[in-house]
Amino acid sequence: MHQVADVEVAKNIMDANKRLADKNLKNLEEKDIFCVDFVGAIGSGKTTLVEEIIDNTDYKIGVLAGDVISKFDAGRIEKHNVPVVGLNTGKECHLDAHLVGHGLEDLPLDDLDMVIIENVGNLICPVDFDLGSHLRIVVVSVTEGDDTVEKHPIIFQTSDVVVINKVDLASAVGADADKMVADAQRLNPNIKVIKSSLKEGTGLDEIIKVIEEAMN
Amino acid sequence: MHELSMAQGIINAVLETAQANNATDVNEVTVEVGRLAMINPEQLEFILEVLIENTIMEDAKIIFEEIPVEMDCNDCDFHGDAILDDSDHYAPLVKCPECGSLSVEILNGKDIVVKNIVIEKPDD
Image 1 (cartoon, rainbow over the protein chains, first blue to last red):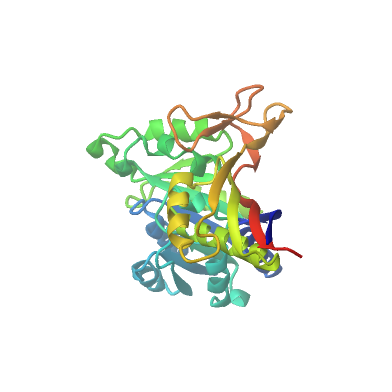
Image 2: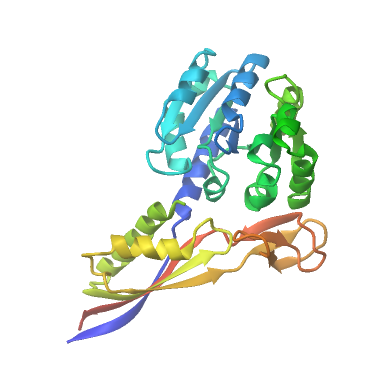
C-alpha cells in the first residue's frame, strides 16, 4: 500500500540568481567599483559604446563581454588595452549572475574602478536576470525600427537609462527618433533618455555624464 | 526564451523534494509564474514534458498559477496589485490602478516558484 501526500516545495527558481547578483554587488562595492551593464539588441551599438567610454574617460575599466558563442566583442575591446573577459553563454540568450560572478574572478578588481558588463544582444531575456550592477543602460538603434521601444516595454520599465543610437541614420531608414524618445518616457517616466550617433560622436558626453552622476 | 534553464530548475526542485519525502511517484506539480517573468507557460510546459521523461515525475500533471504584479506607485501612495495593460503586448505595461501612472516600483510578479507537489509514497 502507499499513500498520497501534498508536499510544499516553495522554491523560487529565480532566487539563486538574485542571491548571486547580491553577492556580485557586494564584491564590487567592497572594492569601491562602480558597475554598469549594457543591454540591447544585436547591432544596436553596445560594443562601440563600451569602446568609446574606454577611450574617452580616465577610469580604470574592466569589461565582461557577453556573447552566445563568439569572442568577437571581447577581441574588439581587448585592442583598447583594458582587461576583458569574454563570457560565452553557449545556448542561453542572456547573461546571469553566476556567469558574471565567474567573470569578475578573472578581472583584476584591485586595479579597477569601473566594471562594464555587455550583455548578450537581446531585449527580452535579460529582464529576468539581475547581474549585480549599479546602473542598467539599454541601447536601442533607430535602424531596429521606431516601434522597437513600445514593443519591448519591460526592459525600458526596468532600466535606468536608454540610449537611442544611430540617429544620423533615422531618415535613411524612415524612423522617427523622437517617437522612440517619447515611447521610452511614457513607459518609464524616470528613465533618462539620450539620443546619440556614436559614429558621429554625438551623445557620448551625455552618456558619460549620467554614468558619473550615478556614481556619486 | 530561457525556458530550458527554468525547466531544469523546476525539475531539480521537484525531484529534491520528492526524494526527501521518499516519493515513488509525483502526480502533480504546481508552478507559480509571475505575470512579468519573460516565460511563456506553454513553451515551459512543452520543454518540461521532454525533460521529465524517465523520471518519477514523468506522468505528473503540471499546473500553472499566475503571480499578480504587486507595486508601489511613485506618483500617489498606492500599494498593491497593478493594472496590467496587455492590449498590445504579451508582456504587459504596469500601471497604477489609482492614478494610471507608469512610474512604479515593481515589488513582485517576476518570479517563478515551485509551490507544491502531490506525491505517492509507501505507508510509514
